[in-house]
Image 1 (cartoon, one colour):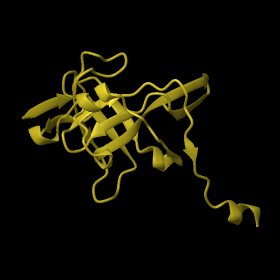
Image 2 (image 1 turned 60 degrees about the vertical axis):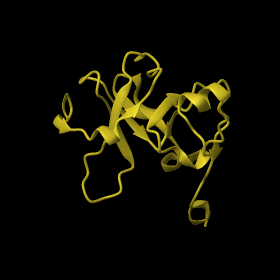
Image 3 (image 1 turned 90 degrees about the vertical axis):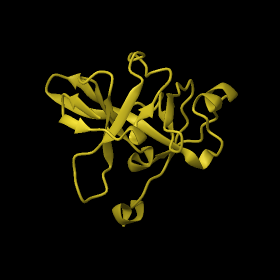
Image 4 (image 1 turned 90 degrees about the horizontal axis):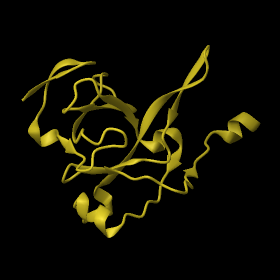
Amino acid sequence: MTVETFLFGAVDVDPEQIIEFPNGLLSFENNKRFMLIHEAEGEDPVSFTLQSLDDANLALQVIDPAALGFTYELALSDAETALIKLDDPADAAVVLVLFKQEAAPDSAGIGANLRAPLIINTKTRLGLQKVLTHVRPNVVLSNLSSVAG
């Protein structure tokens, strides 16, 4: 099937690659079907575009938390596990939604929503957004010895 998108124009979508969020995403509850796209060919992308198939104008940048030096240990409720049909934790992928920070008019940066990661079952292609009350990410710092020496 072909889907018209705002960022990428007409995109062919393999129905086997559709990721469904049965409850939608925060503030986008009516958008349930998505696909992952990345622009760079031939390299390992760090971030992807999570393109809504229900609204051509909705596209979110997502990133693996490990690319930012974070790891999560998440506990899913029985209802959450059933919602995404997760039998094996190894089938779960965690990604963070990126957003534009606008602290001052002349400075803008990119932030990641650490409090509401997306959990996607890579086998069933079902996902959910897990809102966390306490975020205790494990931060990995690298190359400190070369900076201090």
